[in-house]
Image (tube, rainbow, N blue to C red; front, side, top):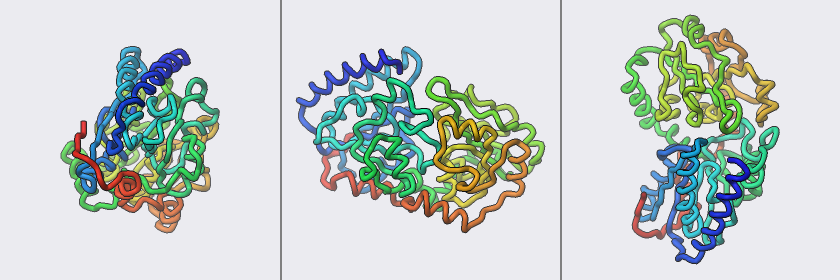
Length: 382
C-alpha cells in the first residue's frame, strides 16, 4: 500500500467509522475476519467450529476478504473494508488472524473487543513491526494497531509477539494455537492422511517427503525458495520416496520452482493435511516446524541463505543451537537428512515445552470460553 492509498482509504474509513458509531451496538456478534484467504482455515476455522459446538446461538459473521496487489483487487478490497469497518464499530468481538485495515485505521470503541490470533504459531522469523530492518511507511504507521488481546502458542512467544504486534506483553496471552488442536485427535490425523491419499494416489505405498518453504522478500517483491534441486533429491532418494512441494499460501505459485517434484500440491490444499501424510518435512524458516514438532516426526531444515535471512527479516531462534531437526545447506544435505532422519524425543519434548506448551488440543475451546459470552442470540453466519 502506497502512502497516498493509505491516506485516502484511512480518511474515508475514519469518517465512516464515526457514522457507524451512531448505529446500535451488536454486543452478541462475533466477527471472524481475514485478509489472507477467501476461505475459512487455520485458527479462524477452529474457532468457528468451537463456536458452533459450545455457542450454537452465537451471531457469527465471516469476513473472508484477501488483499490483492493489483489495482482492481485493491479497489475491491477497499470496498469490502467499508463493511469491515461497520462491524469493527458495532460488533462485540472481532477476531483476526493477520493485519486488517478496518482495525488499524482508528481506535475502536470500548464496546468492541479485538483479538489477534496470528495465523502461525511460535516465534521463529521476525515479523510485523519487529522485522530487521523495520517496515517502511505507511506500514510503520498503521500496521498492527489497536488490538485488545493477542493469543499466542506459548510463553516463549509472548515478548516477541508483543513487539511484532504492537501490543503490551500483559495483553499477549498463551491460550494455545487453535489450528494445532487437530494434531491431538488421532482420528482427524488419520482422516487427513486419507484425504491426501485419495486426492493423490501416486503417493500411496511410498514414503513421503514434503518440502514446504516460506517466502523471501516482502509484499509484492516476495519470491520462493530456490535452494533445493528436486530432481537431484529424487535421484538420491530413489523411487521408494515421493517428493511433494507445498508452496506458501500467500506466494504466487509461479514464484516457486516446481520442476522435479513428484507432486505439486495446490494452493487450496491445507498444509496440515500434508503434514499428517508426510514421513519427513523439509522446510526452512517456516513456522510449520512448531506444528510439525507436535507430530514428533523427522525434520530437515534447508537454510542455504541463513546469514541473509538473519539480516532480513531476522530470526528469533538461532539455527545453530535452538532448533530441532537436521540443519543443512544444500540438496545433498537434504538427501542425507531424509535418509538418516531420526527424532530425539528428549530434544523434541524440550522444544515443545518451550514454544508450544499451551497447545494441547483444547486451544479453540479456551478461546471461546475466554472471549465469547455464554449467552448469545440466534446464529446468522455469513
